[in-house]
Length: 85
Image (cartoon, rainbow, N blue to C red; front, top):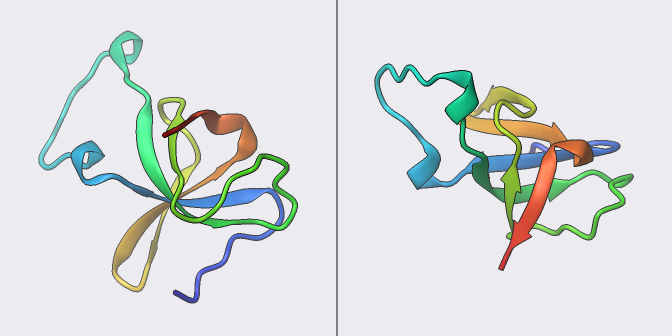
């Protein structure tokens, strides 16, 4: 992949069970954390993360980007709640 995060950014891909199809209306108070796969870590990220890690994010974290017909999520360290596994 030619998409590399810079600085303190972390490139993620939502896990298949996190992807929703159609329209979903959820009250803000019941938003659940997102579970994502780490695809890349910027050189200034202080957390010990590496490609392949599975992490949990706060709801509505970061921003979605589309690159080469795939959707990704770019976040910073402050959005990460936990590493799973």
